[in-house]
Image 1: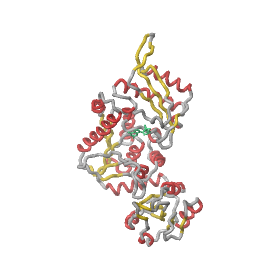
Image 2: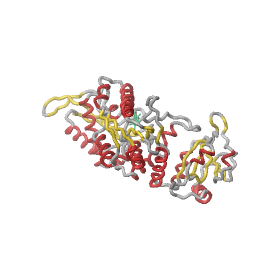
Image 3: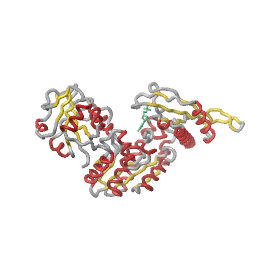
Image 4: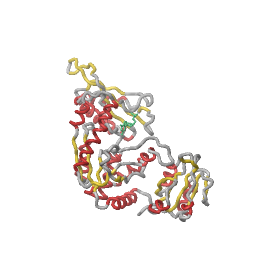
Length: 430
Ligand code: XMP
């Protein structure tokens, strides 16, 4: 293995990720593990150079004060305790270490090398995946989103054609999205890719369904059904690749951290389709996932994409989806993205898209009264998607976008700009 590692044992602190990121920022890889890790589990980790017991104000898990297993002390690793007065370490701190203290622990006491970089991370993961998978096959749902794309690229490097990617086009993708998945993964990376165009099936199920929750449920369950059908057609698959990343794991709750939400990517597969998971990104933060994608040679547009909801354009084609409105939505969204890129706003704005409501408004086209759809532009900035502010877009740019959309999308005759924060509004409309 190429990278040294510092293990942070979570003894009830809320600041595990803060210290993990501080250590990684100094060039040393770090992982957070539960307080009751066994010496055997610890020994199975590669290249551990030191341990940090991260206490914190509760130091209590499920009502029981957390004590450190005596066995761990006898392993001989350099150890540091933060906010844990009863720990039997030479180095005890009341709060998170400053940079000088941390550096001295990492480099003088642990003798760690600052060798955490994406090149080494990728090399290590390739080795670990090969060790885990052997000559077996791995199935991966490749949506084309950042996480699944980076996992795919990594697994292709590690196991080549032993990876089977399934890309399900639910008909609610943005313009050219499925095409670019095929271009990058099949044509450029020579992946084993199964492309399923399930547009008719999804749009059929969604016909006349106007309730947003119902639409989401149909899209979610149909997706699992299509994926399951493909999985059943294949033989000899033992593993399921997943684009799980570190925040998914933290939000799902560790033994010592509260559960915020249950994480699931391709969750909900039937019991008889049991796979072992391959999750090579599960220790990476989002920005590190992107850096990993670049290291693996994925195009920047793919790696720096804005977030896109699982139900896709389905939640932006408001009410009951119709094909003509879906087409108007897809085209207007493509124009918006093009103009944002030309104006450099794609690097500045967190999320931006168009929405097409399910009504028509009066307009004039070719000197005659005509009815057309309305297109709403949404452009927001946020840190965590829990709250959001609106981007103050220049009027000249807005006007140019409105002119292009109404000229190039004949069914749209009005463009409006949405100026509501979250809360009271949400980012999406459904
Ligand atoms: P809201 O509309 O709740 O959206 O303010 C917050 C963020 O979440 C995205 N979003 C989703 N992402 N599956 C996803 O993967 C979904 O069903 C979903 N719904 C909303 C939304 O685009 C925004 O970034």
